[in-house]
Image (tube, rainbow, N blue to C red; front, side):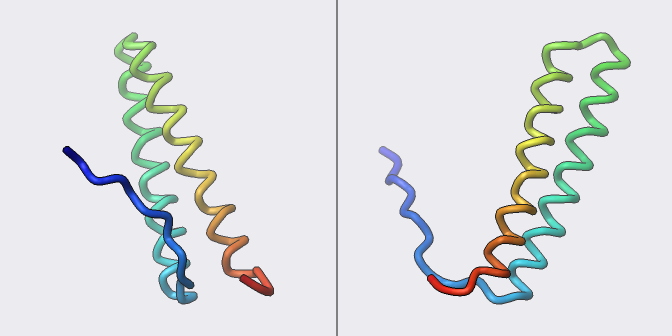
Length: 73
């Protein structure tokens, strides 16, 4: 049986935040490129699924940006 994930309760350094933002952007770009390939192949349900994942991945940058500018815990 898999153990439940615990919420992260620590601070990220600025370099970790930047690395996370870059990784999220790279992942979002890759997902949307894959979605385009599937769309061009008329595999619409799979294309939409990957496009949605790309949007979600893009949203991580805003969360990480907010973490970088937060004033208190």
